[in-house]
Amino acid sequence: MLDPSLTQLLTAGVAAISCSAIAYVIAYPMISGDRAKEKRITSVTETPSRKSIKRSAAETAANRRKQVSESIKDLEQRQRSNRKVTLRLAMERAGLPADPQAFYVASAISGLLCAAIAYFSLPKGQLLTTLTVVAGFVGVIGLPRFILNKLFERRQKRFIAGLANSIDIIVRGVKSGLPLNECLNIIANEASDPIGPEFKEVVEQQRLGVPLGEALTRLSVRMPLQEVRFLAIVISIQQQSGGNLAEALNNLSTVLRDRHKMAMKIKALSSEAKASALILGSLPPGVTAMLHLSAPEYILPLFNTHSGNLFLGAGLFWMGIGIFVMRKMINFKY
Image 1 (cartoon, rainbow, N blue to C red):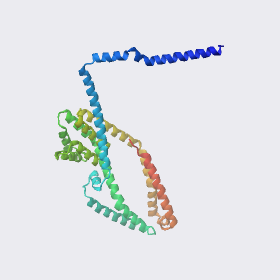
Image 2: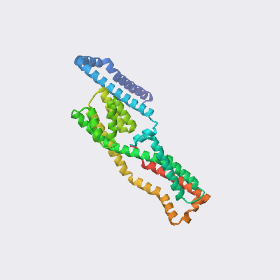
Image 3: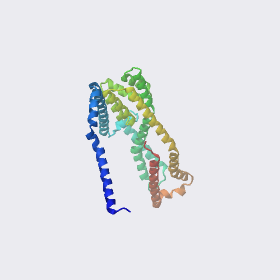
Image 4: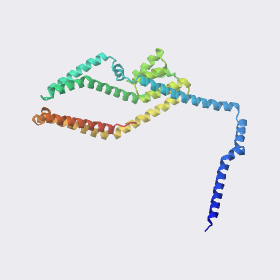
């Protein structure tokens, strides 16, 4: 057993030695002159030309990063300003002639047809007038917008499926010495709908004096996809700061193909869940329709009585919640 005073003395000595070692490690570069020696060696070995090359490379990288951030911010601001989608723009996105008057006429005809079908197909009862009005309202407001959105989504999918090949055309044309405008003109004339008409609009705007970056930004408004935004940003930055356009577009094409592969993989993995959701969602209305055709006296109290109407409304409410939950479960963000 050591004496307590001796133990305290040893502890204090060890602590003092440790503090001295730490202070020496921290202060050694300052008192040894190594930093000053390294600076002198660097100043002797590095020529002014090498210093200027390093400085210019750093400035170029900083300017490129600044231009990228400014281009992204500018594109986001334009998309916020164009966030309100008019009916004419929605019809252009769906690939339809931009004629709102024809859309309103078609909506009115759709509402009349839906109301007539509901009036003559539903059983007579207290809710016949209400259901007819609801069907007419859905035919005027809901059904045309639903069809318009489906056409737009289908056109978007076709555009994404062919965009990577179109970018490859630009890459091969630029590598072979063709100007960028000529490559875009080839895509506009040779590509199928919707890529051909959209790039033809870009080419026509260029002929009218619109800069290429602005024309591609307008393309991203008509076709609001991340892939189109990437293309607009890459070409805008290349026009501002220069660089290897073929290499940049080749990398973009690779990214787009990888995203498309991921989308197809997610679609394959979620196909079973989608089929189950479709079957579960179609069973209640299908069974109701079969009962109405085979034994109408059995199903009529559901429409003719007050308690039956309550049960019908509650069933529709819970079925809607179930469909909403299943939709959230099978839709993936990637």
